[in-house]
Image 1 (cartoon, rainbow, N blue to C red):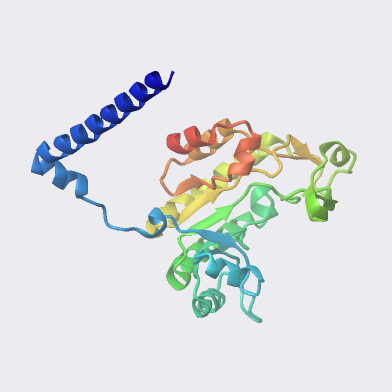
Image 2 (cartoon, helix red, strand yellow; image 1 turned 45 degrees about the vertical axis):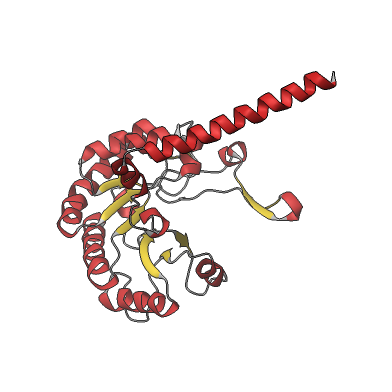
Length: 280
């Protein structure tokens, strides 16, 4: 038994030495050109070129934590100034200065203040609202150096939750949506709104706005409905499937007519996120 084990150890040591020497010989005999290629490195790009951003306001307690983590871009609304509209140069310039002074780059606006129920429901006054949206895009690019607007197509109710204080892990409070509880709520003042009407209004909006976005390089990113249900209080929802996003982008095909890739919402649709990112 001892002799067998001794032989095994000797053979193992010999094999290891042979492999090591073989590896050294191979490395030594490798062409110099191959070694040079292997040693070539690409220039360093911080975060792989991704602009890490956080949704927050300038007075949020998250700001110092974001800076500490190296998250130096922000998704933010426009600061309200007395006597100025949100799409006025003064309001946009003031917002940019606030973030510049903090040391974080304002990169995205989510929930543009010039896009509301008039446009999404096709009501009187939508042309004025769309005109203000176009003005907002131009001023945002010129005075805010912001080139992404995240918008949604959820009129009236928008982000729906039935409970904002559900106890979670460790007693932390969480948001909750119970579709059965929501079904019992009455219609809004707008009554029932069909999916066809929402599609028609989205087409009207995109055909008016996307050509203007192309001229100035403004990226319009459509956010999924949250949550992805069929209807809430009589208001239909259409941005709740991958196929519907394909349809929305086909209304006016353009690199500036895009999607907010909210992975949580697309996951709830049953989408294969990596495959969807590659396809889009």
